[in-house]
Image (cartoon, rainbow, N blue to C red; front, top):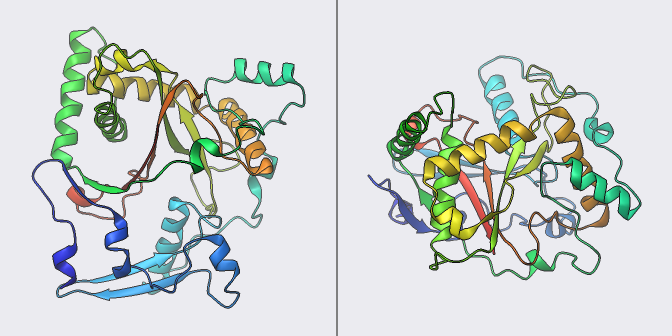
Length: 320
């Protein structure tokens, strides 16, 4: 039975086999998995639906190429679909598809200009050189796991963080669920470095949503369907220092990074880097060859489910 291979809720944090083991339940085996495969099938629909009938529920798998929309864009499509089914009008979209084309500083052409850009930016994200290319990413053997974290575990560490801040005289310090869960994943990632004397710089990076953060994309309708994500990076911290930090301390460092890097000016400079890497056909680099990096994509703010205990969906990628 399909239910027998699905991951089960647990009272504590638990690790399960990756999505590859169950994706046949949620997408057709003939559905293309890459843009190359999609282009080779000119008659294949851009949006694909796959229904799986369980004993007590029907699951609708939804697939769309990432180049058309990010996860919040997928949420907009699903919200519009539900609105139509309910007899309501879907939210209006921007008439201009490439609305972000004008957002982002012009990437400098000189080494001096690049140096000044890096000095001005708080993020450590960079454009890799032609020699570096995408080697740092393409050469990685990817392993995938699903991690289930009950909300009460998140709330426990969040409460401990606030207690710690008050004890240190940081009464105004605040951290969210995203910060705590990212910090937890960071601590799990550090377990691969057993030595406490390891002074290798470590960089935490995570995706961030531009909607509601820049004047071009306010939070109110019309809604922006396509990709509107950027990357924020915590400044390099030695592994030995990170291993000595509590989850609350790491979460606070993440929150401070978000606050400092979500200004329109900082986001414009980050978009400058991302556009240049896209133009060159490379992946952004957020850590050097002498460093280690950890990347997280979170869509926890998109609350599609009313059940609080099961609404956290995460995709995690680790680069080391």
